[in-house]
Length: 470
Image (cartoon, rainbow, N blue to C red; front, side, top):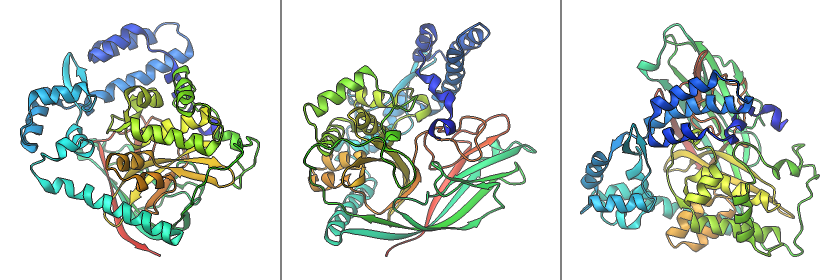
């Protein structure tokens, strides 16, 4: 079932890009790179290489949109917001891999969210931010997480009720009159923490509502663009999250890959590679061996992997996942990445080490805010499926909050809306084109019959109608 439902052609990203096209791409000579791709596609090439070139054509078309600032514009923006910010400091941050950049037509351009990334990850920058209100959300979020950890330990877990509204609006210049459009809005899976899900409202009759356990679950609408340009749903559910006090399980029990789980899957489904992203490369196998050493106990091995990622992989906003062809390798070599990239590295290293691990992702929705978030699950006897949130753990590590860091190995807060149980799963009905993010779905996707819409052509608004503790 797993392989039958995955968009298989993404596995072609494991094929090497021809060197001349690779050189043009990273020089930012996109027009010539695209021209060479078209020339090569006319030749008699291996099928997988042809598909790689087609995928690369899409990737190259999306890259420039994410790097709008010249170096001078980035410098001016930072200097307006941070006291005594200099051009030399910007260059030092670039050298430290703290500011993402790329060449576009031979000119260095800076990523759109570089400043937000600096505020989130660099204490020295935060200390000099002129508008102190920019820091308040982070401070209050840390306080909430610490209180939640304490409360869950005292009570053995927490449960929350959620009522959420999701709305997708097409941008006016993205509306192609008379064309049929499909819109996919994510909803929670009815498994794990989720109980009593109910779809309360849809702005029109859905074409399809995916089954309760569909790995990337959505409500799909189909309409004529122009007549419909705004799509909305509301739903409610309860999140019941227990607290698990962990003790290393003596004996170093290895998971039985043939064990049948309550959902009918087998543990070995979560032990192998899943191309193109979960790959057991020589580099990652070597890293897993370095991190886990001679340890044989599965729980201790998983903890060593978690500790390594939370202390060595710095949180960083990144370009769209579709444009990164080896996400775990990107995280491990560059030692940076956002929540999903860290989760995928954790999953890959765990599987290499013989520990079943899988994806869980959706929204983090607390009484304060709502936003996209990814994390991981891993399977350890006798506990069953446990959680690992490396990005929250890494934030706690940076803040010197060791108790919070320890909590997010094995446990989660109850402020989660899990919408994806697999990375890179196809929707129901399948999309005909690769969406803005063909791997992860929290904000929804849209497509015409001849192309997918990309971020910037639509806006998705996630709203908290009500969250309350049960």
